[in-house]
Image (tube, rainbow, N blue to C red):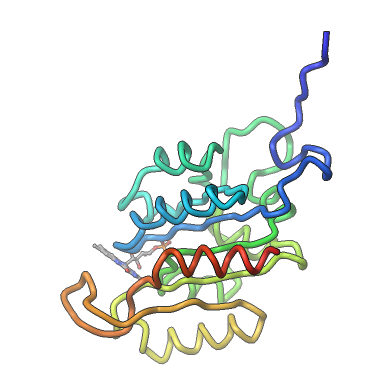
Length: 197
Ligand SMILES: Cc1cc2nc3c(=O)[nH]c(=O)nc-3n(C[C@H](O)[C@H](O)[C@H](O)COP(=O)(O)O)c2cc1C
C-alpha cells in the first residue's frame, strides 16, 4: 500500500510544485469583493493562490469564496489552527513567488511602509523571502490616494522594490469621481503572472 503523503501543498517536492505561487492579500476596501474574481482568474491561469484576508476585509467579503476558488484554506488571522509547527504566515512568506495585494487600502499601505507586522498580511510582507516580488493594486477614495501621507508611503514602498498597478480614474463607490478605482482585474492578473514567470 502506498504511504499517504503528509506534506502540505507548499511542501511538496520542488519538481511537483507549481512555478507560480501567489499570495493574494485582500484588504478592507469596498472593492474587496472583486478579489474573488481576481483569485479565480489567477487560478485559471495555473497559479497556486493562497489568500490572506485582513480583519477589515472580512467586513466586506467572507473567506468562503476564496477557499473554494483557490482550493486552499484562507488565512484570516496571524494565529492559525493549522497543523505543523511553522506559523502559516511564515510558511507563505518563505514559499511565495509573489505577494499581490489587491485591493490595497491606504491603511495597509501605510502599515507596510512603516514595517508593521501586527496582522497576517503585514507579517507576510515583512517576512517575505528576498526572491519574491510585491505587487500592490490600490483602491480608495481619491483624496485618500492623493493625500501626501499616502503618496509618501507609495514612494517608500516603490523605493524598496514594490510594483504598483493603478489606481484607475472614474466613478468611485464613495460617490466622487477621480483617481482611486481598483485597476481592471484582467490587467492585474496578467501583470502578476508576468512577474512570476
Ligand atoms: C464602506 C467602506 C468602504 C471603504 N473603502 C475603502 C477603500 O476602498 N480604500 C481604503 O483605503 N479604505 C477604505 N475604507 C476604510 C478601511 O476599511 C479602513 O481604513 C480599514 O482600517 C482598513 O483596514 P485594512 O487595511 O487592515 O484592511 C472603507 C471603509 C468603509 C466603511
